[in-house]
Image (cartoon, rainbow over all chains, first blue to last red; front, top):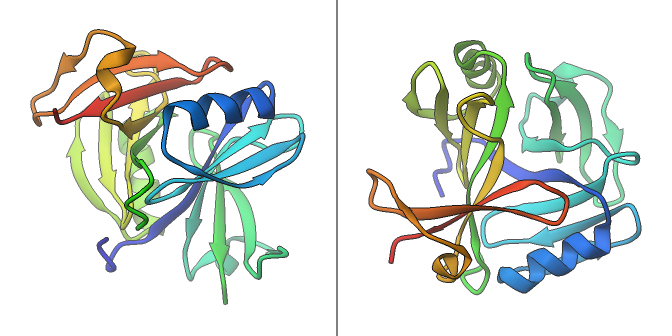
Length: 101
Length: 101
């Protein structure tokens, strides 16, 4: 870990069926399921969390922790204590900016 | 870091123009550019590397280190000493399996 650099909290990829995707990733990799429902799952790896998301409910995206999150728009509070805002990069990829502040 | 779990080495996202994308990510985040050319760039964050790839040259994908990589197909050697194979998950997402063995 290089503490001078920002951290990518999670990467969310689009899947057709959450349960099928979860079974596939957990069969081939050493990982730990943190959350699972019909619309998304959250899987912990050694260095990052992988979200498996049904596109109709959640966009595929990268989630970064940055103290500058509030500069990019109105933050939405989450149950885990974090707050975040979604923006898009110049190529249209969704990016979630998170903060605990 | 949880050493019992596998590591996600990198996440590669599709971009329209590598230089524009690189400037955008490096303006808003504390990160370090490891490689840059016209078809892709590699950016280091505290916990993972982000690849910005032109889709015509490289597919967007997740790259995992796993000792089981060779079980999934013929490995291709890379200049950094790693070897890897690309597969797809059940939803058609590209996944690169890497090993140093």
